[in-house]
Length: 228
Image (tube, rainbow, N blue to C red; front, side):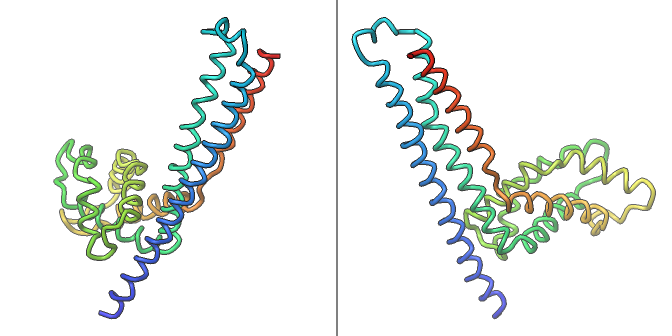
């Protein structure tokens, strides 16, 4: 009883940290959208103002300005995406190992309960919905947004079809357990893949932001050359 009560506040604290990480990343994304996206756009737009502006309609300089304006929502979307990654990172840092094991148990249990008839295992993704898995994990991990984010992250990236092929090939050399019984080979494969994915999720990358900033700088350079 005490272990469950201590786990609940820990999960609440992790959820609060994940929410704060998400909010701060979205705020930074909004700030970048305002300063970099909007600031660069209005700076470039000031170069297009003047008596020659009507003649610039549908011209390359005006097209550049429209493309620069697109970086406002791009920076905002990058902030939201990074916020999700950082929320998952907080959850993985606090409960990654336990989460990996429990998600593995739920997914493996559903696969093990499926009939081994021809074509049945190829449709395994149909029975692995985030809602169903979230409901099974709710008594232990709760139903917070961070938990659901991790479940969606795993199901979106788990190569189930490849895993089923690998599992069946590994099982070809030895007798399969009875239907519904735990399969150590399947669980080992799932544990390895899910653990790797969560580990990658715990290290969000700044690469998309750097690419966007480089693309914006290159576009601005082209615009400056066109309006020289």
